[in-house]
Image (tube, rainbow, N blue to C red; front, top):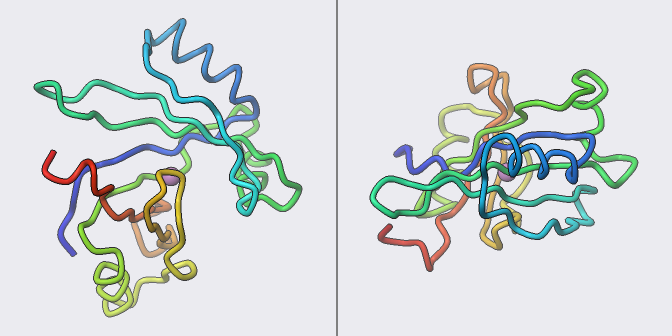
Length: 147
Ligand code: CO
């Protein structure tokens, strides 16, 4: 495994609208993507952009609000009613190679690689094998390669 760019920090919220207002009004965010539903995961998400060094693409904040009854994020919000940090997402060049590496290290990979919110393949690794941090591994979007 070779650690890549921190693509985003996932933040669970009971209200994506309230969180967008917070990042705009309190934190001065100027670029926030339109929220969209990920029906299979039972969540609504959007991305708050932060500027990177030297005009590069910075790390994003993924705001996640549950819309489905069975969304895993609901259990998180039950324990953290105000919302909070949910996961970190790191980029890798090859998602299947990364998955094989985590499995070879005995890490609990949660499911097969699937298309994530950025339209590229992702998988999650269980927090108990990752120092307590739910970790998302994401294949670098092709358009961003070389950034
Ligand atoms: Co994420």
